[in-house]
Amino acid sequence: MTTEIITAPQRQRRPLILWAGLILVGLHVFAGLLSLVWLPYDPTAMAGGRLEGPSLLHWVGTDRLGRDLFTQMMIGSRIALTVGLGAVAIGAAIGVTLGILSAFATRWLDDALAATLDILIAFPTLLIAMLVVAASDTANLWSAIIALGIALSAIVARLTRILAKRVLVMDYITAARTSGSSWPKIVAIHILPNIWPTLAVNFALQFGLAVIAEASLSYLGLGAPPPNASWGRILQEAQGTVYTAPLGAIAPGIALVSLAIGVNLLADGLRDAIDPTRRAR
Image 1 (cartoon, one colour):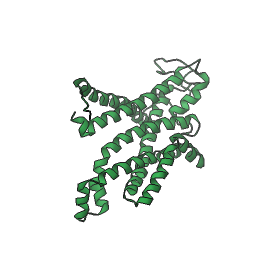
Image 2: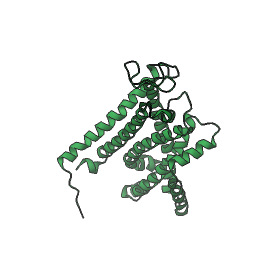
Image 3: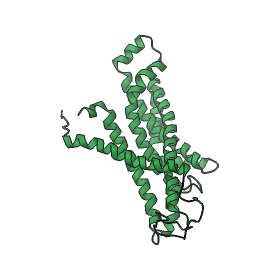
């Protein structure tokens, strides 16, 4: 049996990770919220010349139609946050419900649900989302959110099932059942409070996955349609001018990567802050 030794620099590193994640995510949240009330330019207007470089008037330059790229980047932050939160909310609602039901199900039904979840998880999230979006009448932002939420629900359901089964074998669950507590009461009072820290970290990771998947869908033309300036669509439009105006592709790429890294750092910091065994080390 080995014992992990946590040094002082490692303990100091944990809050730094959390703060780094909060700063990166906070910048995108600020830009997304600000875009609701103020934008430097009309996102559809030709605010300058075609493919202009960074300047005082256009901080990130302009695209091939003369539209301000910084304005589109701000709208992209709003779309990324909307998709991430919406997809995680749908995935959590479906996944937690299925996971709890599977934990309480009979053995044959539990095995059937577990096998179904394993099959769904075996398919890439983006592929499932593409199939759901393709099955809808038109590709739009809400169809992308629903598709990603359904795709992510299998991962959440499997994790919820595993965590709930671990809690169900505890002595306090047996005591609650003996005292006459109903199953809904046991779920609300004993199971969910004990599994939510791990689920919260997983939701943060799923958020980053949903943002990247939405950008991929938009790049393929299956995400938010124009005039919605998704980062994926900005990348798709900039691919023809990547050599003459590389900033048009670099800027949304940096934004996408920074948000994904920020969410992962935030999830890592939350895990250290929430998990009492790690916090005590």
